[in-house]
Image (cartoon, rainbow, N blue to C red):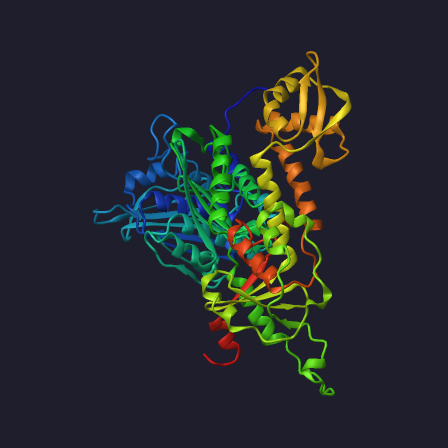
Length: 604
């Protein structure tokens, strides 16, 4: 069969199959063109989920007749010249408009800034009409009708109109977050109108428009630089999380991306803070020299490839963990909101019951009174020693009013002064402007875990010597990688030596792991070092064991605590980074402001 040149229309349709996957893909390309044209106002209108109509109107620089004639031809662009090493615009290939025109009915009307009249061009199923004069305001209007009418097989793979409209909405939201100085309006017969007014340099205000006002109250700002790569943005406190990753936004030099490396780094940064199956809320912006990132690795430009992915991942994980260390122990405001809703909707009047004198009732609410101090307060400050904390006596529960001297302490501390223990698991503390409810088991679990993890950083972990060294056969290159990291492994309690060209001898294993399959662990380490060039796998195993030990060694639910014990727990929480969540990501405390309490009683 002879080789032949494909027709131009078919070439464009093949290209459209890669670039234009669905109506949202077309909307994304057209919005990017409007942003590259310097628009400050972009209006998007849709019908039929974008299948029937997508109209993008902008007030950018516009195009003249000559520009329009070239714009609908493949590989014609004003955004790059000769190389792909310095891409500073969202679009650059010159494929979007001809691809859309090959599968849909495309009309472009535009007027260049400073010109007295506009021009119009149409491309229907790959057939281009001549450019003609047309009335137009400064800027461009791009109208796409009946997408995929020229390739009806593609229509079968589209989702419902509602789903396709939702995909376009998500595209607009991502663009709006990336460019807060632009006003976006999304409307149409298939949706309610969304408007995102420009917020200028106030990026957090724009994020609040997209992610909700709650994000502003629960966001932590991050700003970090490593070598020539900068990172900025906002991340939610660990207790502010969602059921999917739809509220995670990443941008590289202003370009919205859904890059696996960035999302993986985000998961790693919150690994010990967010519950399994939940996702943190974050907006991350990475800035670097365009020559250090390849944006031409995916037809939709949603993935990128970094020249030094390890540097980028380390920057993200380090910056977020530092931010969480700094501010991440505060409770999410949504906890108080949930409590308010529970109070309003959960109350059901009880049937009349015989009245019981308060003093004789078995009440779960226990006001505090001073008790002789045991050694808990000292032990909780010392970290490791809390594992051997003695049990409190059951006769320590006496219903007496709190002495006023304790009330004076509340304003001095962020988590206030302990006032009561409820159901022998929850500590109620009074703060300067409200109250805090602490889950004593979850809080102490985090404190013990952090103490054990700190020991990993400060000294060599205890190890157990094997009576007979275990010889493990490995490929020579794996042996080389393990021996290159032998010093770090030894600090974590794993002592290995080279045993010929293709084997290592394990002489000591971490005592914390107890009886361990050394061969399996060493092989897993070799694989991980090969992939990430790090020995973090063993550290992860040790921290998992530390978390388990912390859970079993912490103050249990149902344990009655004395006033000094509760206050010591609160003070240690204030001094411990990440104490706002337990090792499993659950919140350790909820804060309720006095204004919220007053609203419950109709005082405000």
